[in-house]
Structure formats: structure tokens, C-alpha cells
Image 1 (cartoon, helix red, strand yellow):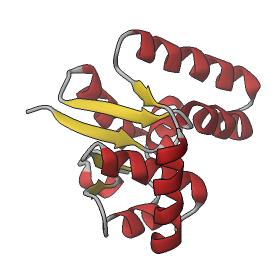
Image 2: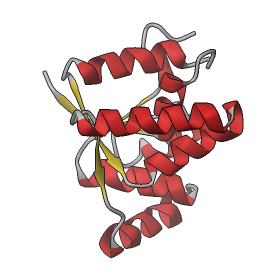
Image 3: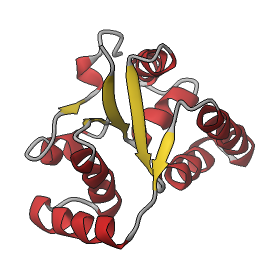
Image 4: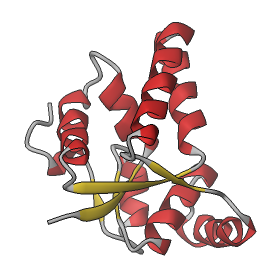
Amino acid sequence: MTETVVLDSSVIVSSLLEGDIFRPAAREIMKKVFEGDLIPTESSIIPPEVIGAISRRAGPAKAKRAENQLRKWEDLGLLSYAELDRRRSIEATQLALTLRTRGMDSIIIQIAKEKDATLITFDDEMASKAKNVIKTLTAKDYKTQT
């Protein structure tokens, strides 16, 4: 059965960084994406978040490789992006206000809510707050978690 999901940047970062504690769970998730079991719809803020995180943690060269990988996944139709327009911004702002989330997290939650999608995140705080408005999964929901 195919399921629409929104992958938080934490999942994508973990899938691309060797040695990341959540990499086994992230790779399991990405395998389901490649097999067509999960169909991710992402916010357009995901690429800068992912590339920034990888650049800070592993350096610009690895971040550039990750950027190329994200583009390949997009070209293959494995990732699609929803633009942050005014309506989405207003809805995300209200989510940030009511859920007391970080701004970028509220944008990710907004997309999941709009698309009636499951949010997959390795950020326990985000998952805890988001579960009040959408279905959420974390690394704990994947058997290969370390």
C-alpha cells in the first residue's frame, strides 16, 4: 500500500551521512521511497535545511554531494517540493503559535497537514508537538533503529 509522507530534514540528513546514529532507520525509510511504498511531498525549505546541516556536520564537499543526490532524487520523481506561498506561510505561522514549534518545523508540519500525510521525523520534540494535529512516525517506529 502506498502512503503519502512528509520527510523531515532530519530523516534525509541521516540517510545521507555515514555514521549517523539514525542512518539505519533513515535508509529503511528511503528504501520504501525507492520501492514506491512511500511517496514523499516536501516543503521547498528542505534542500537548504539538509545541505546546511550536512555542511555544518561533515563539510562543504559532502554537502555538495548531498545536494547532487537530492537533485537526482527529484529528477527521478522520488521527491517533490511544495512552494512556501503566502497561504502556507500563514497556516504555518498559526501552527507555530498553537503548537509552540520552531518556525521551520511549523512549515514542515503544515505541509503534512495540508497533504493529509504522515510526518516522519527523528526530532522527538517536533514529533511530540506535531502528533496533536497529524500522524507522526519517528526512528522508534523502524526496526533497524540503533
